[in-house]
Length: 365
Ligand SMILES: Nc1ncnc2c1ncn2[C@@H]1O[C@H](COP(=O)(O)OP(=O)(O)OP(=O)(O)O)[C@@H](O)[C@H]1O
Ligand SMILES: [Mg+2]
Image (cartoon, rainbow, N blue to C red; front, side, top):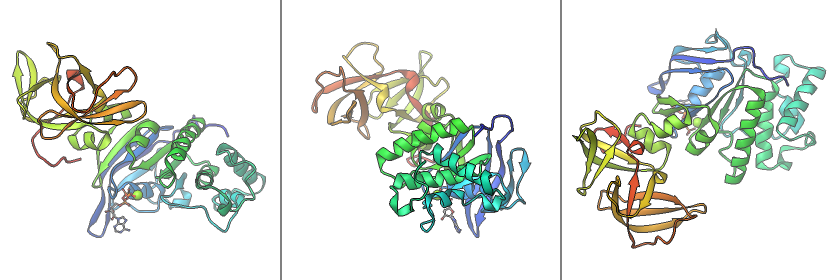
């Protein structure tokens, strides 16, 4: 299949709100998704991801706002006439159809028949590595193969925009990682604009060009995986997107530096210049280095209370006399002997400390 590279296949959502009676499932969402982009909607269960994706496909009508596909407003266009392919959440193959007929399913309604249809099915099956499986019934396939049939069905119609709702959620961890890589490669080969839904942070970070983090129907932040991980817009986003230790403190200016006093009397220098008053600081586990006590370390001292071996790395919980233990993760290689009960000091670069003004216990995502 020739990649769609010339025609614009972007998606634009303007002020989209979707209500079910009193339930506001999606609230005032504005998004611009570029042609050829792998864009992920990420958020906890019930935050509105499926509802928004179905609206883009045309299966839900938004209550307010408008949706544009490839430069055309599609609000009045029914699902089967929108140029989108959808992989539904928990969507299984049609059990009574063989692999070939499953993949061909969407073609006839689009008036693609005869040799053109055959060609599309062959090509889609080859892309998902299922050539030779045409006559099999779904019950003769593994879970991962069934999932690939569903993906082949969506790409056989050669949509401008591919919509996928947690397509890997029901697979075991190893297969999920393998299919994840396959999906990304396929998407790059096709150059197809893809909107992908997941509640799995790691999946979102590895697959996406950009991510929209959603909570309670709203988009909280849009950015590349690095931006979301390293510069989360709120403590809620920071906590949702990756592991870390979040602590309360008081920020003050000392010698033209920002220093955060923590509850145990120790302090951390942070890179945020204008910060004063009550704050939360966040530290990612791999940003902390275990160091010899030395002058100039920007760190904390504490006692290791647990040690978990994770294969390539080791995770420690360190009791620093703060409201919660601090999580540290280091590569196992070259770590030396560091055991439970040891007192250690660790250092974090001021620019790696996340800071969020405020002192509320509850983190709004
Ligand atoms: N047909 C419906 N009628 C009423 N409420 C609905 C309907 N569909 C969804 N909702 C509600 O809208 C909100 C968003 O649901 P949605 O299915 O979009 O969430 P999600 O982010 O896809 O969650 P999950 O990760 O669990 O799939 C939820 O509170 C849900 O209960
Ligand atoms: Mg859903």
